[in-house]
Amino acid sequence: MPKSMGAVKQAIPAAIGGEADVAMDSSGTAKQASTRKILPIVEGVVLVAALLAPLLLQDYLTVFATRVIILALFALSFDLVWGYAGIMSFGQALFFGSAGYGVALLARDLDITNIFLVLPAGTLIGLTFALLLGGFLLLGRHPSSVIFVSLGTLTGSYAADRLARGWYYLGGQNGIPSIAPMTVGGYEFTEGPAFYYLVLGILVVVYLLCRFLVRSQFGLALAGLRENEQRIAFFGYKAQHLKAIIFAIGGAVAGMAGSLYAFHEGFVWPNMVGVVVSTQVVLYVLFGGSGTLIGAVIGAVIVEGVSFWLSDNYRDIWPIILGVLLLFVILFRPLGLISFVLGERERVGSFGAKPREDVKANGKEKRNAP
Image (cartoon, rainbow, N blue to C red):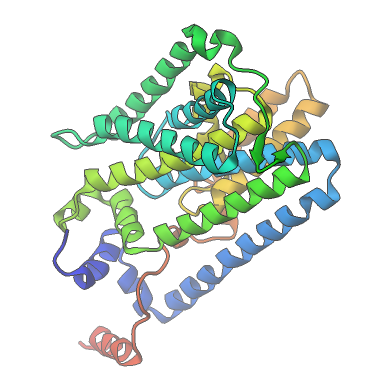
């Protein structure tokens, strides 16, 4: 690691586009400051809407909304990996589905359904699989290319899908049905408002932890890694180790989401570890906007909501309509829908203490000097 963290805090923004220069410009500073204030507003609006949803929705829509919240948690895991570290993982469903299978086996074979046991177990399963796959793909003698990691994760997801379909112990093509409800003490979490608010609370906690992570020194290094990996390595960071760490954290979050999904749906099946679900989470983040966390949540909500509405009203052609809609968003808003209200620099944010007034004055004098 670099010897002087203060020097790195000044150097890394230069690697990701010269944030120091932007800060010295009065109009640019005002624009950046206003952008920073928008994100908490968006997050607050989304949270209030999520809290009120069960009070306004019918029972079957509350069940659907619970599934969407779980998928939003899954989308967060991918946004950490791709939006902040630039790792295109086409195998995120491997961690999601393997955790689902793991807790399903605990419930079926050992009759373990306590939330304080199954959720940590699912998170640990996702973390373990991510460590194994990430160690193989990212910690080689030579730096891994984006294509190598993408194809490697895709292959892992496909292999897990074929293994689940052919393994009788895992139920083969039929998966594992009739999973017992998740419990805490003598209470069973069944479909409805209780399960919804449980999942929402978990999402909020994980979101806040992720927000703290990406706004830390580690997150600053990740932002620089995404933009210019060679320069970050020049500053003394071990780029591949940083990638492996965030890859493992993303796997853990995906594992938690997979555990909740298994108990909410009541069964698991091979598609949960396959390529289709891995591609699905990529679309969530592409549609909502990568590198902001809240964009992944919004993307999951909108894609699932639009899919639900289209499938109900245009049963024969709804996949085509959804595909065209996603294509238009990706073509004309490459940074996702969140880019309508958030500037591109919000993906990096601000780090450290604000510069003192005398430092700002010295900077202005140097800039105005002939």
